[in-house]
Every structure is written in structure tokens, then in C-alpha cells.
Image (cartoon, rainbow, N blue to C red; front, top):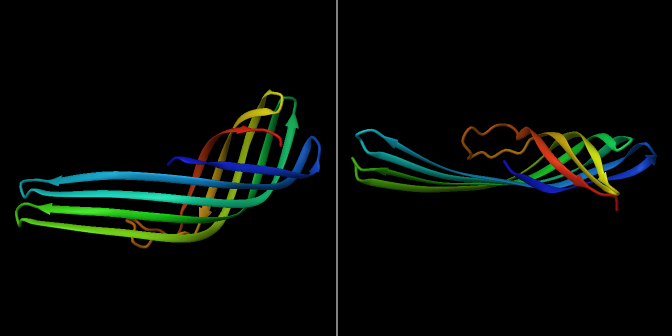
Length: 164
């Protein structure tokens, strides 16, 4: 699922080893179309689904710089808003029926995140890096297939950062 956004770290203490406030605003989306055909009874089912997520988190970080490298770890609470929609069409040529249905649901949830990564100083005030972020929330879509008690996962990011 593609995710884009911005993250910041505001140091409150330290020089080579810093601690401070970490935050991010991220946006993710996924859409999927599925078509199923069933045998001689000529049954066809089309399902178009879409999931949109907005993720806001703020927590604390610790970061250490050594030479041209720096590594960090951050954690804190997260809030998430999501929108799930699904359009289904079922054609049964044996009974000559065509049924259509649509579901759309918005949800809000809270949870926590942990993010860790490392950056390399490419040029003056320009870092490139990678990070891994774990997220656990209680956001729930009741009408979605295989609905669960929370949205969670591990995300990998390629990052570009600068000091402001």
C-alpha cells in the first residue's frame, strides 16, 4: 500500500546524541478490482474496493550522529482516519439477475507507532535514508471483508531529510 507524507524531529536536548519531539503526517491508499467467474452456471462477480488512510502521529525520539551517519528511534501515540468503499456487481445468467451493491464507511482510531532508521549525509544539510515503522491502531471497518479489531502493520520508507 503506497504511503506518502512528511515527518519532523525537533531536538530539545543534546548535540551528537539528541532527544526531542518526533511527528508525522502520512497518507496512504489502495484500490483493487476483482472479477470471479463460476462454471457453467455463468455467474460473474465484480468487486471494486478502495481504502484511503490519513495518519497523524507525535511522540519522542532519540538520535545519534557519528560521522556522516545518524540513526534514530521514535515512538508515541497515533491517530488515524480511514475511508473504505466497495462496489459489488453480481450477474447470474442462469436466473437472469443482476444485483449491485455499494458500501462506504469512514472510521477513526487511535493507537501507537514505533519508528527506527538511519540516514547518510550526502551533501551539506541533505540526508538520504531508510526507516521501518510499526503501527497498531483500533480503527475498524465493520462492512469490510475480514474486518478485524484494528489496523496494524510494518511499513518501510525511503527518506530524504534536511535541517530547517
